[in-house]
Amino acid sequence: MSQLFTIKLPRLASTLILNLFGPRGIQALQTPSRYFLSLFYLCVVLGSWSIMFTYGYSWIDQSAPRHLSANHKYSGYLLFVLCIASWRKVHNTSPGYITPHTFARYQSTYPYDDLFFPRNRICPTVGIPRLPRSKYDRLTKRHVARFDHSCGWVDNAIGEENYRWFLCFLAVHVFICVYGTLIISTLFRGEVEDRELLTAVYYDSVEGVQVQASYWVIGNFMLRRRIEMAFILILMSVMGVVLGLFLMFHLWIAARGMTTNEFYKWRQVSGWHSFEKRRFEKAKLITKPRLENGGSVTVKRGSLLLLVLLARDVRLPIILAYVPILCQLLHIIASASGEGVVQYGKLLGLKTASILKFLEGGSLSLEW
Image 1 (cartoon, helix red, strand yellow):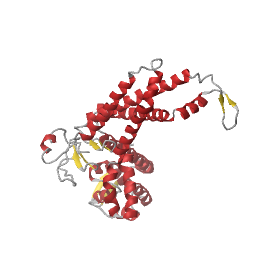
Image 2 (image 1 turned 135 degrees about the horizontal axis):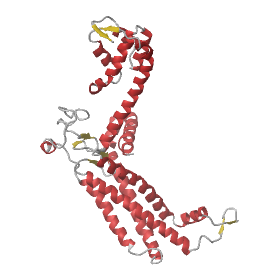
Image 3 (image 1 turned 90 degrees about the horizontal axis):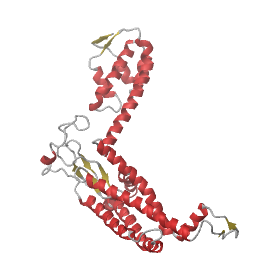
Image 4 (image 1 turned 30 degrees about the vertical axis):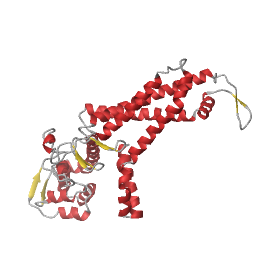
């Protein structure tokens, strides 16, 4: 969800604006687009609290003390302060910017793993060494220590220094949504009981006929009568579920010692591994009948390197993952079936001409 609103949709809008208005259009909208989600959040939150203070508090006075205590109004004031204060805290707290002056502070915090975070890498944007678990943030245009994600709702990056405040921000909003849903639901139920709507007689204004009381009829009646509070009830109930799941996700990855950025990286690696494993299993089905008799093969010097360079979407850190596939290809070559070589090579994304070139001559002998 966060990537949809902060990366994918802005990128799509930027492409559309670039095609329509050119680079000047992008420059004119670059600053306002950054603050769109945070301004939208403030409008929704302040608007919802305004409705609650205007319509909900008078409704609480009418329901007290039979259905609700008037003390819930004071709880509402406290939650409103916590809501705005938690947003402001996350918005203003630095996520942990890595600069030449702060580099020594974060240098030895986390070890290199030589996989996602290799040694001796320089950030091409800011020109400083890339530390483990750090990442350049497009929103703030700075390098962030233990980068988690960019949050457009608070207009800030979430990193090592403000992640705990981000969790507090989520927890406060989940509690507000759940608490508000219970309070407003109690107000609706209290009015249904006070007005005896379950036994009331209803008339269809269009047909002019009597309608039997049901939850659907009562719901439509209350929606027309309390449309503002019905909107707040729906908003809080939906957002309570969404934010609750989001908070559980962050607590889960925090317990595993991961960040959101690292979680999605590992998911991409897992998806890539599953895809390549399926291709490898498919190749084994092709080569299995020819591998049972054994044999030998002579391959041109440097052919393995040539094959790796020709393979589609292969990067240096994952070349070793193709070793089993290369061995299978050598077995196919030994079977002296040009058709089998071409068929398997296409699984690797190679062109037929490249495969035939690979088969020319050689000085490297393999036997099994």
